[in-house]
Structures are given as structure tokens and as C-alpha cells.
Length: 504
Image (cartoon, rainbow, N blue to C red; front, top):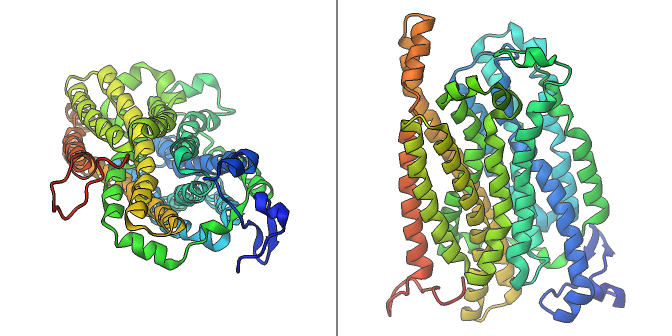
């Protein structure tokens, strides 16, 4: 679309018709007058409906974290390794989709793409509501059941792609000094979908089941409801996006923006850091319910209300991490994102050490409290790393004397790239847990009788400790990377320019 000469009304951020729908051609959020008169209200409206769509996207993305806990109640028996694959594959698919989803915003516009991406969420919900609870699976072999379920679970990855397109789109609406809080709120609103799904779905799937039956170790569930319950909200999000959101001509990005971003070292450094923050948040959100169930079965057996209605309290971490995210962005606006990020990695490493102690001492309280602290720090780190990206490229633009809009587009491209790679970190976390579980599975399989199998599983309840040690070491490395590239003053003549004094 060629840029039109907008009438006077369009100069105040009003939508104008074009060949591709309604676009805003003139957008100057850095101009205080424009921002106060028009920009703030328009940006806020787009933020609200972006959060709505993204929230539902995250809810669909993690649906299978609850479904896998209840497959046994639906008569489907899978190994722990297979259950981890059913949660890991949606994570992986969502990670890969984040790159094309980011490209979709400049191609279709934020308004149209939010509508389309929200509507796509009807696919995984329909499959979950029709195929998974059907009697059709009952006549299949265990391996065939697994592959059918894996294909259905993979479509939940559509919900994971929404994040990058939403964040890239919203980053254009706000001035530099307000991006941290705005992006934090946008991401937190989406992240809350994890907690909402993990709290609501266990309650929805037992509707109509007698309360006395629900308290039994094995009880009826209505897995179809786990998909059906989201459909009205998906339609609402799509309709609201179409009627209430806007597209910015300024957000149009050519391929060169992404090419230059991919070739810039800062893109890859920030992507690695985002693996540690968002990768931890989403990876633990996917894995923790299964980890708790298979690490502390004695605790859940003694607390049937928590096991049945609250999915082992796994939702609490996602809730705390989501709420902490905008605080991380807000704090970064004031003291610098790199300082906040470094503190988060140090804290995550320390609390991972405490989680290891909790597993070894069979203390659910210590393990759970440690992981809640990790979720809070990961959430804050999500906000601080995403605040660093526009700050880094704004500083690079000032140093190189380039077009500020070009560097904004490059920063938006990096947000999409880092979002995809960071989400892939969540997949790696689940792979680490799955790998740690294989030894337990082999030992249980070798046991001769059912009683021996139970005894062997109980004796190896610390199966997750090797994975936790890997995570602890990773946080130490990420803290070092943050300090070296963004807080340590580089010596004169260094090949990597220091950003320590740039307010990153």
C-alpha cells in the first residue's frame, strides 16, 4: 500500500480506508502533543483488545498440560515420556509459528492478523472436543492412540504464535519511555491465560460428575468440555479485534528489517537471554503439573482436593509469573533492564538450588515455594529483557545516526525472533525433564509385579534432580552473559561495544 496524503482528521491517528482495510497513516507517539491528544487513547484501546486475544491464545497453548493429567481417567494409558511429548510438542509448534506470525503483522496489519490468529484457535478446541473424548480412540493400539493425540495436541501451538505478532504490533503504538510497561502489560495479560486455563479446565471437565466420585483416584471426566468452553471467548476476541483494533502504516516492515536483525549480534544475545526468562516461564508452566504429580505422589494422595480441583497447584506459578512481568518492565524503565535481568538470573539459580534440596528432602513445601519464586523472577525477567530490546536498538540508532523508524522496525523484528527462540527454551526444559524420566520408566518396566513397580517408582522420586542441576548451571551462564555484554564496561578497542552506560 502506498502511503496516502491523509486528510486533516487522519493526522490525529484516525483510521483511513485503504485497499487492505483501515490503517492509520500518521503516528507520532514521541510527540507529547500528539500523544496526549490522540495517541494515548488509541494505543490503550489496541492494547486492551490485544491482551484479550493473546490471553485466550496462551490458554489454548497450555490446554494439554491439564488434559495429560486426565487421560488415565478417560481410559487412555500412556507412559510418562509420552505424556511429556504431548505437552512439549505444542510448545515446539508455538515456538516455530512465532516467526511467521511476526511477519504477518506488517503484511496484513495488526487488526486483521489479530482477528485471523484468534480465529485459528477454534481448530485445536474443535479437535479436543470431538476426537480426544470419542470412543473412536478406544479400539486403537496404545501407539496409535499416542500419535493421534500428538497430532491434536500439536494444533494447540497456534496459541503460542500469537505472542510475537501481538508484541511486535503493540511496540509501535507506544513511545520509548512507555514501552516497558506497555509490553509488560501486554505480555502479562497473555501469560495470565496459562494460569486461567490451569485453574479453570480441571473444574470444567468434572461438571456433572458426582462430587463423591471426583474424590476417587480414578473418576469420570468430560474432556470435550476442555475444548468447548473456549469457543465463545475465541469468537468474542476475533470480533473485538476486527471492530476495535487498528493497523499502523508505520509498522510495515520490509524483508531487510528482518535480514539486518538476523545478522546483528545483539539479536542473538537477547534471544539467548530470553530463553532463560520466557523459556523458563513457559517451560515450567507446561511441565510443572506433570513434575509435581510424578515427584510428590504421596502429597497429592493426602490432598485430594489439590490433586483433583487445582491440578497440583501448578497454576499458581503461572499466575505469579504473569503478574510479575509488568513489574519487571516498570522497574526496567527506572533502573535499566540489564540490571533487573542479571538479578533475576542470579535469583533463579539460587532458588533452583533450593528446589533440589526440596526434592531430596521430600519437602513439597520447600520445592513448591522455590518454584513460585522462580516463576516470579522469570516473569520479571520476561519484562526486563523485552524492555532491553527497544532500548538497545534505539541506542544503536543514535550511535549510527540512522533512521529512527528503521531501528524501531528492526527492534520489532528482534522481538519476534527472540520470542520464537525464547519459547523454544521452554521445549528444551520439557525435553530435559523427559530425559530425566526415562531412567525411572526403564526401572519400573523391569519390575516384576505391580507392587514392585510402585515401590521402584517411589524409590526414584528424585528423578527430576539431574534436570534441575542443568537448569541451575544454565542460569549461572546467562547471568554471566548479561553482565559481560550489558553491565561490564568494555576496555578501549574492544570488538564488542559496551552498552553499560546506555541505559539498557
